[in-house]
Structures are given as structure tokens and as C-alpha cells.
Amino acid sequence: MKRLYLIGGTMGVGKTAVCQGLKLKLDNSVFLDGDWCWDANPFQVTEETKTMVMENICFLLNQFIHCSAYHNIIFCWVMHEQSIIDKILDSLDKSNCEITTISLLCDEQELRERLNQDIAAGIRQPDVIDRSVARIPLYHKLNTIKIDTTGKTVSEIAEEIARL
Image (cartoon, rainbow, N blue to C red):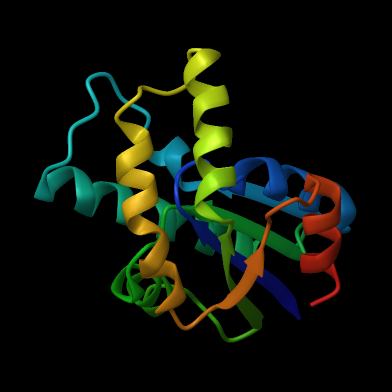
């Protein structure tokens, strides 16, 4: 049986780093970051681009599910609404796949510190802080396993997920 990890969280919570760490801990694993399916300049959010990215994500996840080389599939994205998670799940072949949905959380102070480090490094723009902080409460409402990343290393968080 395959294992699919859908890992969400607000911007700056550490999704990509944790998933890269998890990929190294799990045998025969593959990682897809949803942002890779929507990496464009300029970044445009329209109905057409939202539909396209969702179709791209679901296509790739199904390809990984059907590929015999992979037993553990790891996916992360900013999934702040249950409807996003449900739409992905509804589009997947789940017949031979156990799915674990996870939301990574951290306290506001730590999130601000992480984002400020990214801004200082030129990775993010300053407007990301307010947008990201505003989404924190949305993750508490989701039908997911909640993992608090506050004060934890990437390795500790990846190990916690691997034990689920």
C-alpha cells in the first residue's frame, strides 16, 4: 500500500524544509511542492491559473501513486481551506493509498521571525508577514493532524511525521 502525506501550512512555517527532511527519512519516497506547479513571472492568480495548478498537482500526484518505484509520496502546499484539500483528495486514485493530511503550525512570534529572516535573505517580500499571520487561525479549522513546529528542528518535525 502506498502512503501519501498532504502537508499544509501557512507561508514560512517550514513546509518545504520539513518535506525535504521527511523524504530522506522514508524509503522509496518522492516529494512534490505545490509551488513548483505555479512558479511563474509574473505570478498571476486567476480562475484559469487556479484551475491549471490544481490539475497539474493532481496529475503529478496520481502519476506518483501509479509509479511502482515510489511507496511514500510527500506533497506540500499552502492549503488553508478544507475545500482545497477536498478537491485534491477527490481527484486522486486512493484505491491502494493511505492518506495522511497534516497542518504544520507555529506560534505567531516564531512565524514572524522566520519570515523576517526570509525577507532579509531576499527570499520573500515584506507583505508576506501580514498575509501569513492572518491565515494561522484557518489551519486550526481543518480536518488535519496538527503539528506545532514552534521551537523544533526540521529533523524533529520530519521524525514526528514519519512516526504517524
